Length: 403
Image (tube, rainbow, N blue to C red):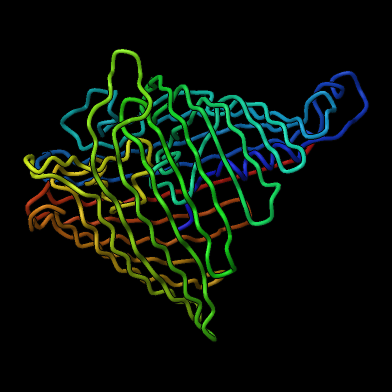
């Protein structure tokens, strides 16, 4: 399912494209402005065992942004974006800040924030950026913008990207603050992100990364993805392994906690005549408390998209997590897209059955600016958490204009 997100590379490239000169006093500073508007009203329903009340959340995200060139300098651009999240007068849910603890959580508190504010410079395959930015690397398993929630996660950073060699992309970034989805949810950090992607051939792209999250852990990994055409069938695959070690970088007074864990995922899908069939197996390692290991954690990830839309595994269980999933999707063209996913969850250490989940979604493009999303998640608990049902109805209106 297409998620609402903006990758760092694509966003910087868009900003770098907004160059040129126009007449007028203001145009000597700002040129080729592009305005963006998004309105995303959503209804979310949660029925979770253990709560006498069911959550009913009516919220709307309003985002207004602009990109423009600066000072008529070729390749120099800027971006500004503000977002507001508000409810429609009812708060029959726990937003994590409204104190309604008798309701299940819908993590969309009322808030207003500058979500992006940055200056970028692009020339000869080099792109530099300083400021606040949404960041999504690869599939957002480790570094993401949590784009499903109404207020996204953003990063204050200085970053450099080099694409001057064919098929190679290099990224390095220093992050000094992370703004989470919570109201006033931010924390200072000294995190370094290193990311390299090389397209070996049309059927194989390799990605290597080292994400050094200060006083938390280092993620060091390798990811392989590709697509192969076998007649009328299009096959896509992914394989990834990451190890999690003690943090290389340290925040003042926070020390360097021990971390020793592993992650891997393998998956494949086949598409024909609008249908897609897929399967994947993902493991986040755990510990029994005596084996000298730790639990694999993902503190900066977009988690909603990973292990079931019911959000039962936003934190990895101590004994780890295995997620065996199968997917069926159908692209009906103008009639919309449908996807259904079945998950079987177990512990990594031992043989604890965590339960199963079915997720389903239908997405329909009403017109070029407006989309409809119907979505549901049904988690059937076994020896972990509790039964949970969630439904969503969402409209998403996007408008862009060059002035």
